[in-house]
Amino acid sequence: MSELLFFSLLNGIVTGLLLFMLASGLTLIFSMMGVLNFAHASFYMLGAYFAYTISLYVGFWLGLILAPLLVGVLGALVERYGLRYVHRWGHVAELIFTFGLAFLIEEVVQFIWGKETKAYHEPEILQFSLFTFFGQDFPAYKAFMLLVSIAIFIVLLLILTRSRIGLIIQAAITHPNMTAMLGHNVPLVFMGVFGVGCALAGLAGVIAGPALGTFPGMAVVLGSIVFVIVVVGGLGSLTGAFVASLLIGLLQTFAIALDYSVSDLLAVLNISVDAESALRDLWALSLPQVAPILPYLLLVLILIFRPTGLFGKRET
Amino acid sequence: MLEVKDLHAYYGKSHILQGVTFNVKEGEIVSLLGRNGVGRSTTIKSIMGEVAPQGSILYRGRQIAGLKAHEIARCGLGYVPENRDVFPGMTVRQNLLLGIKDMKVEGRWKMDDMFDMFPNLRNRADVDAGVLSGGEQQMLTMCRTLMGDPDLIMIDEPTEGLAPKIVEQVGDLLSEIARRGVSILLVEQKLAIALKISHRLYVMGHGHMVYEGTPDELKANEQIRKEWLEV
Image 1 (cartoon, rainbow over the protein chains, first blue to last red):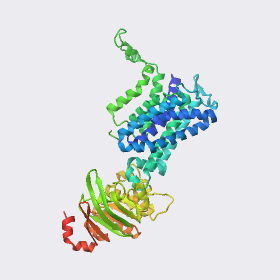
Image 2: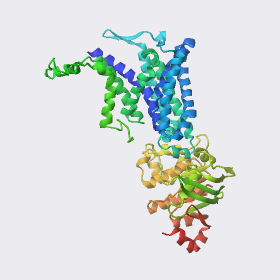
Image 3: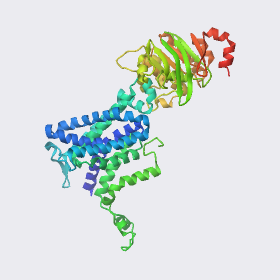
């Protein structure tokens, strides 16, 4: 039991921090645009595909650096020549634009790389078991994912709270007009934040590609979860995104690891269920079976009981 | 220094500024007087590019109408909004730092100058700006703009809602600003302050200037005061 808890905890943190790399960019971009960027997870997918192609020529490590940069530049261009132009027609137009962009990227990815999963693997140097605990291996690549995510989290935190550019970003997000009138180039800041947000999503894709698979559906798989995180954490709140990322990461891994059903719970409570009852299928549902819907269940509960999210301040 | 000619501005369909013409010379303190709603704040906002201006705004010979707000600020214009727009959630020190446009250029104001003039701000340098009193927030907004080293500072209603003692402090700061060679365009309700510190005054009514003169001339002109200023 203890090894199960230990590994679920580790895996949950790995997943959670990976999700945070996407959610942090998404929530920052939401704060400044006022709309959710539906194409955010598409940049995550592009990161994986770019890194895959780059790794074919120059190896994994250069891909790890170049792919996020490429995705970041692409993101900045999308903001500068797409979103900023669409912005004048309001939020609905922006929303539809990012929605369309997500479809476009998915089609382009299928067009260039095809529909099948790509053989994008972790580098050989990381293909070993870091340690064995109660007979279960913990792959070194997961530890690497963990390290990269933590490093990114610390760098992001330091930039946002300790540096002057971080101050300007925070001011530009909450008071764009006043910040501009103090002489700061707010549109440039927005383009930068959008670009860096996309680059972070790209980096998440690069390191998740080998672990979770590089296929055209990977954006959709993660995209909806990231929206859940941003809403649960509170729209625009970085702290909220962090807490919610870990929460969802742990929720998902523990739900898969713990093979219990409602009838098990009822048995503990000494309630017997009629084996012929019409609801017996419901009672027999095990946690791993319902694991995929748990984040959305959490989303619904949060929207009912705390519509602003865990750390959100906005009413809408 | 600042030459505004036939300036028009709209909020939606309402025509707020209907041909505003005035100027500020180097080193001058100029006040913009008038009742609420005649377009004094809008005048400053359109000079800063926050409200889209139509007409000519020359700053040191350069046409700034149509430039973006940050470009206008970098020409050397500073703006202190009337709503005391501090950045809450950031400390007093961080607010002041955000006023600096370029860390490499040394301006005529240092953070210590601000703290010397307003010891209150020094004592509360690491306090969240959102919890300061109204007067302290007003000081902070003015100091923040000064940190950007403007050559002309436009201040919207700095004394509104402040206690008499703090109003006096604001007056002192305005004199100090002028002493360091910064021109001031002041939007003010309190006639006493404006008369005391200004070199010239304009009176605004219904979207355009209705009077221009020195403090002494305005003091002598009871008709203008009755018609456009007194409530």
